[in-house]
Length: 308
Ligand code: GLV
Ligand code: MG
Image (tube, rainbow, N blue to C red; front, side, top):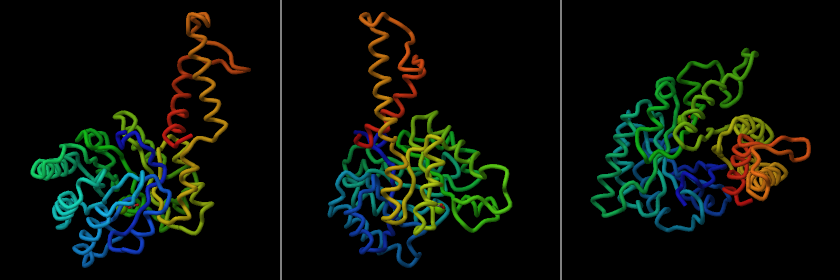
């Protein structure tokens, strides 16, 4: 199955410089793991971390997890070495590269071209490795549609709240929480919706970023619940304690999944010859039509991707 369609309810961040956390991550039940060469990895640790990551990917043991490496952004001096070492060394065991702080579609194109060269030179299938684009500042957000369509490799658009809050001068130090003093709505609504619209318009997954108060699972659930309610596909997790909460929050409730399946069955019947070729019908007190079928397909699809 293409990684675009696979569930990414929980995307576990693991510092690429920590063998201990990498080993631990293998046994956790996140849908995705991403080994980080960017902000969780100190500048002096990056060269060794590239080697640790290549070895960890090639050693395997990642089960069904989507295997991703976050490289450094194009404004640094590290990106080309990150991509070259990781894709050359472990391209066969890698599902996607995550590119942080994407500001323009050209930055995605540059990554695509570099990956294509490496794939060609090693005889790999060109285009098999995807790109996950992180939106982390105002310019990235204004270009989000062009970024989503810059390469067919783009699979996900990810909100990076910490960098985003810093980049727009938001007066808050608690990542993902509402800025104190803003009491007229959700300060992230526009950003989340813009990312979600770009993702849905172009058939990508929309992923919410980290929540840093890692011991407060209830608060994580609340913040995750907001993006899940809008239609996001998943969220980063920074700690094993957040994984089950993310998997649950981004899966439909069992009752909703069952109801969606009932709607689909009913729709198939009442639109058929035997069912009277009707355009709409009642299930209990609820009228079902083609639009209801589409809504049911979303819940059913999310549930099936999550193994329900
Ligand atoms: C993640 O990279 C963030 O900046 O929130
Ligand atoms: Mg960031």
